[in-house]
Image 1 (cartoon, one colour):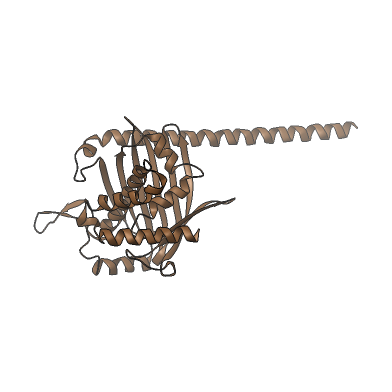
Image 2: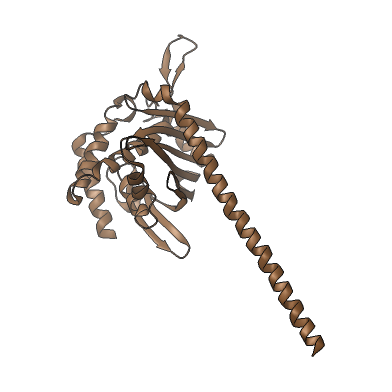
Length: 310
């Protein structure tokens, strides 16, 4: 009996020790997550303060700042902007754990190249099935399906961060990331930061090179550089121009989606489509691709197809 009692007591102490270790580890992880969220929120607030002048005066005629990077095998675009919507509204629309993924589909489908989007949730997480294709109408079978994982990274009363990521994309592109983070900016406004980035391999590099040498040869971005041969300022082209155009299209889609929420549900689609097209036409040198009539017809057809498929 004494031996059994000692064994039982020893097992109890062992279990208690492991429980203490596990509890301490969980507390550490939670504290680390909160600390990381605080650091990101602080960093975004500092960015907002540092961009005061650029947000007030810029080429976009709206409180917006854009920057881009071309890395050896990746592209990245970042937009910082102030939208005239309360933080709680933006948070609820785009970071809500149940409604947010579907709302993101309503955002993404505004982009010319997005042909379809459907959000679904299972035990393994939330996925957005997105079809990417041409800037004109085409069948879903002719487009490319990309599986984006939707992740509510941080959600707090004064900061949120939501992440969409995909491992692979068309033509050997990979590591797609669409990240949105936001903080209140006062007076029912919100300061948001949108990142759009992806990597690419040999096939992707060749495809972009072919596009930029042919139908995309005259396309430009928004950043400017000085031409050494003429000493004149010109818009950047190439792959940086490509990522800047798409980052802007997604940013304007977010604005159009949020603005349409003030309309009755049955009027929101037309409001989103009209506002997105009008916003892109403010920058025709970079973003004009199709006529208003063609865009509206194509997107109505794609949205209807999306609803039927779901």
